Length: 452
Ligand code: DSN
Image 1 (cartoon, rainbow, N blue to C red):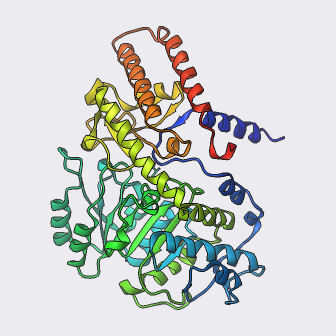
Image 2 (cartoon, helix red, strand yellow; image 1 turned 60 degrees about the vertical axis):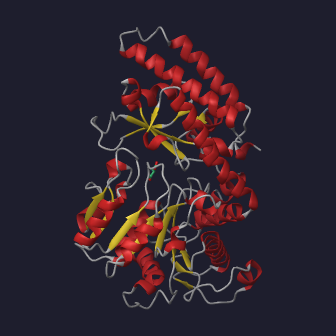
Image 3 (cartoon, rainbow, N blue to C red; image 1 turned 180 degrees about the vertical axis):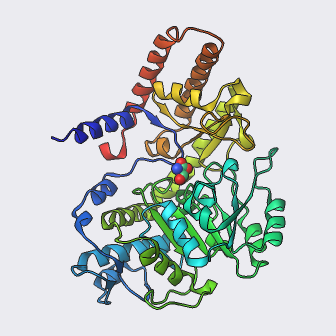
């Protein structure tokens, strides 16, 4: 057997015996895994299942549909059904008029929206990467930053919240074509209503929300949905809190037309402009096995249990943040309102985030070092760590486990502090091995969904 399968088995063991605290990761169900590992990977399906959108979310009607597809290859009788169901379920989940389920990733989804709405040189107003924004929201190292003019708003240091006054001032001054809300390291709930009001004052401004981190919370009804506040477009990944396969998704409000005909460049036509921008604008063949897995995950998220799951993610995050703060960890924003927390370990313990990340990894707690707003340390050794509860909540953990995790984290930072102050690296090794065993023992009590 190929050595790759040994590596996969070892990764499975790592996931099973450790605790995943990276807030953008999760554990998918057996069904999602099965759809992803299916023969649909063999099929080319460039194009779309229909050209005039779906008008029903009744699955029996969708499956019986005889509408002609708009694909460039034959043999689409099954792929059309898969994609139609994925679209219908996504629309129902997020109260959208249209969904494009083809983006290969969140970055592809964002680029497709930019390509749909912007001309080279147009201005986009998004969150500063160093304040919790995402690379694709204008980092100079990205391709989109070479094409468009990104300008940034930030957060307020005292509260950790968005600097709405700055956002409003920049919007009026720079007249962006897109205002972008959505973050990778932000622990508050954005005021969509306020941003939508600002956007409506700017002619031709597309309101875009990148909800990759919180899409599962929106689907579960514990986070507001930007589409309910007049946002035109919502992009997301499908693998974070939404707990689907790795991939992207674009949801829109507006009129769905024939993607083969160039529509007028209006906000109303945004669904069609986006379909054309995904294919053929920025992607070729869709990954039909992943689209099938997305459909399965959307079906799971439509089930009532998902609402309980989403609420528990937030409850666990609040419990963990409070327990960490009691143990001397400084949480930016004073805790969390969603699934993640950003901790300034430099301010708390005089440590950089990388050393804390690496040492926690030794005991089986996985999270990531992360820059904090106005960080004085470099990106590879930033002042913060970022962690969250979507994955451990999937495993069924609750308050008692959050308190144990906080205890373990405190013991690990104590070791890091002792080492920083000169303790020989060998001294704490037995202590770390004992903690590793404790983490492993607890993790094994909470099987992965794919083990059930
Ligand atoms: N890499 C993702 C995250 O961890 O937030 C964002 O794309």
